Image (cartoon, rainbow, N blue to C red; front, side, top):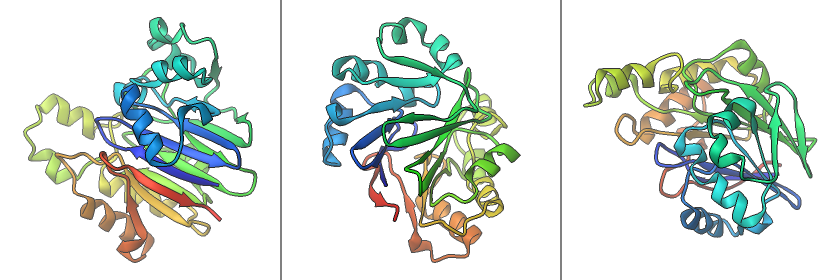
Length: 255
């Protein structure tokens, strides 16, 4: 099993997971042409995708989903709340499956487990992916952790974890107070310190890859996120990868 990021940040998010002949895209916040270019960079084409799983309805995660799914006849999976929030657009897609936030499902060779997260969206989820032996966990777009999140992600072989902002940089930024409160609140985004605290609570004994994701361009720096996660794991900072907005993250193999 392997995974890669097409790009991660407030301007667009997408991540692809591959097991054998199965390739699943998680979210697509990029315009159609841009998404295809980013897939090509990873050696993929849209018609090789077995499906798209959606986390929530915010534009940086869903803006490109409908056009990509319609043009290339790709089935999508999402929660009832996410579907209702974008009913006008998503109802035109013929292959839509509404999921339960606690029930796993299979997309060809991948087992997909959704789990609910606290975020200011209709019915947001994040996912773990498994080929039956190895497991990848993805966790972004949440303001705080929960015991269920930590139980779900414990024991993963790879983890993509939100490090959206540095609390001090956000506090001193030129964001309006209302936006600062939203981003830093319990239904906003994880800061570096909270991501590190969450990571320290997990069983990381099988962890092969840790990736910092969804970094704010204005309110974070890669070195701050890397320091926070490497400190939590007591590992060399060079072992922590960062998924960027422009380049994403190249393939990472889970063996």
